[in-house]
Length: 248
Image 1 (tube, rainbow, N blue to C red):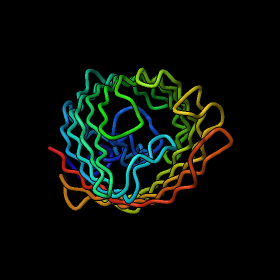
Image 2 (tube, rainbow, N blue to C red):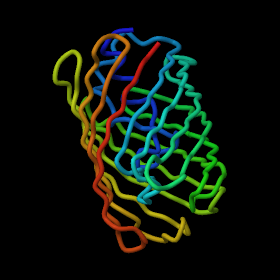
Image 3 (spheres, one colour):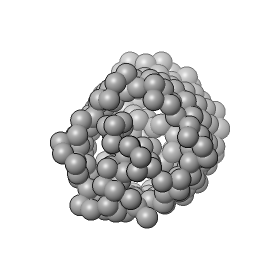
């Protein structure tokens, strides 16, 4: 596995609970430059991601301070277009709270050069949280505008709360060399009877830098924000953190 392939996995593979709430529990960065895939793609990839966040913001809601999490994921190329991801996740707050979250997920995507469509299903179990245990079902669609820009939208139904969450976002990324790239995302979300929010929920953004030390190890520091809109019961948040990833 090359450093270019590692950067792609770092971008597409997991941490989705980061704060946009895209489906699978961890979403480290915005999409990597699409021309970095080349012919290096492997039919099966395994990755471990761990990291720290000063605040854990999930879909505009603050759940914990000083958050540490880890995720194991297997990505399987079923064909040239179909990709299946399976994984498990655990995170815990190290501040005053006893908050923790455990999850298992699978994510099926159909990926072409012009667009990607997928559906992610995640079961989450929470401790010491107003978020409820249950399944999260999240179809999504992304248009690959060019090598640097992606435009995407998704909707999720949370069986724990019985509410709906939807988001629209733009992702930008650009290589800074063979071993690194910078990425940014900007999005907004809407809710329907979702943990006290019903309407325009928040505007969120994140800026990150990813560097691959070698063919297997990468690091991504980032900063992000969530700005509540008219229906959100939350306050403005500014947070930062770092993710470490190992691929096999």
